[in-house]
Image (cartoon, rainbow, N blue to C red; front, side):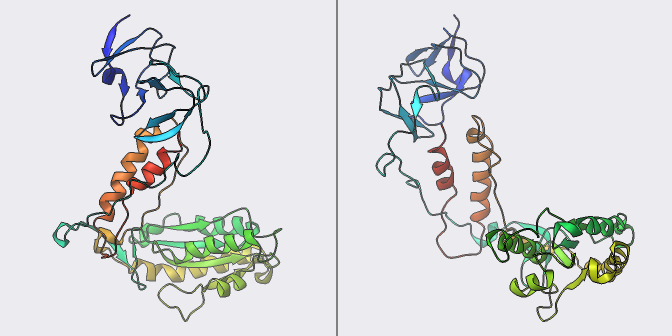
Length: 329
């Protein structure tokens, strides 16, 4: 069988790792030179899977990313395929899975290294990257109405070039749930979050009238207001009170039309990148995410964090990477 340098066919994430990650198919019998050591692949190994660089006895820790990712459930020989058939979680204890041991303080950049973007400065001090008008459904029963209203403004940028669009925020909840229960309150927080988002210049609420998630109650409990005017309540229309779908669409569309000039008056201005709020999301871990998307995202977040205008110590996102890595086999 041909002989290759290990790094030609696999990725070694940390020098101390017990495994390497296959870049391409490793047929059984493939010989890999690992810094003076010789690895003979014992089984066919698919891309993204692990090949043992070191022998690990049953019960011994297996490291990847420089972190313990599990314990050998049986003896692992050099060249073995390392996966769920010979790797397990083992006993969980503080001395076996050390979480957050790589925590370190982020070194902040000086002011002259600040980067900027063109954003929308809102009245509450936050900065948006977009400029929308939103139609928020309080219940799934009003979702179609919200969509009908949105459709009336498909060409909104023709007359209002500074408005990025009219959005319909719809969902499949709002009724048939326990009043003020966990699900109900979670929905209220999410909808209020949309309304208060700095990317939303203005919004209206559309309800049915008999639903659990009464929009008027949500406004009070979530302290929702007209953006920039905390003393004013947002416009609200209920289908049952308006006299049906057609009349609701007409009233809601008329109100959106009133809001568009205000939204269009907003202008982008130079804003420090520290004003951007980042949300990260794991789309589902696999054999490649931990060596591609996750570290790329981590470095981006670290770089952004170093530009924040805060004197308080900040924890590097490398701790997030290390913690996730310790749980991924």
